[in-house]
Image (cartoon, rainbow, N blue to C red; front, side, top):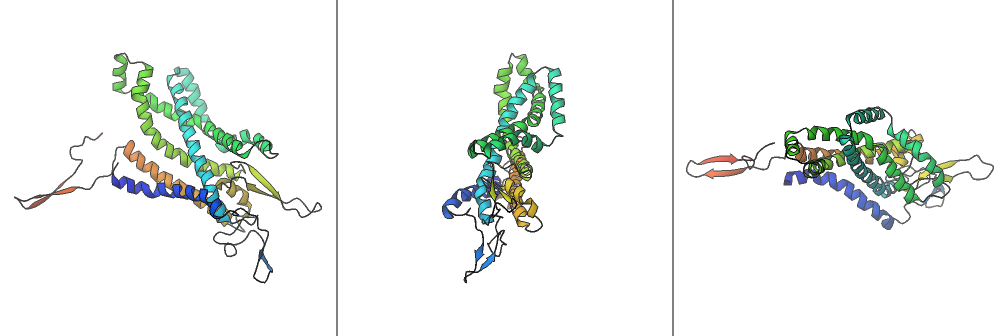
Length: 338
């Protein structure tokens, strides 16, 4: 891996890593970052504002409807959002490989049925399927029967499992093409069984591709989380704050996320997009930044690991004293290209 590649990956890797580190430090730097603020007072003790506060009243991004500093909430929720996407992508790669192996070696008529079902499943929004499966658990979380961390883990597993068939079929088709390669046929002729072919040939090939697939799946997982957030499916569960001042007043519930992850933050504030657009645009900007970084990482890894387009190294110049000429010699001159 050349220095040029490391330089190109440095910033895309640094940004998500820095957000995760800062997210863990926020509770120590600002212990009351999620404290509810009912109003703001000036130096004379007069009430000057009620939540949600504007960026001028509570810099730099204002507050949510509970009066909490919105920027600190986004930083605190970064670790849950990014780790959730990484965990979902990892599970999808593992489940997808297992699914692909069975899909590759099952009889052809079963494979056609599975492929048809998988292709039809691609036209169904995954967010709706995940929401329908997890909404019964939301009722268990609200009364307190299901802890937030357990609910968070169940949500991630369900999201990863639902998205597995499409990835498994894709990997299975790639495996079938790989098994038709000439050197695989030669190995079979020499007596190699399925297990040996899997261990000696297919697994190393998959591991190389899985690194690229992982970065792509992280971006897809983030996109799916946004859709679930708009449907008010928050990772770790939702909490409700009742803002009715008395029993005679109409109910005025305010939903907020248990973990302050970005997707639920968008869904909870989507109704305020016209009056306070930063409550929606700010978390979307964070999502876009992370997805952009993952796309850069995926593109660079694909060019190196799959397409074998390693960035050209700096050429060395050789001075020929006898002829007083300068000749550029490439380090890749005698490298075999695939």
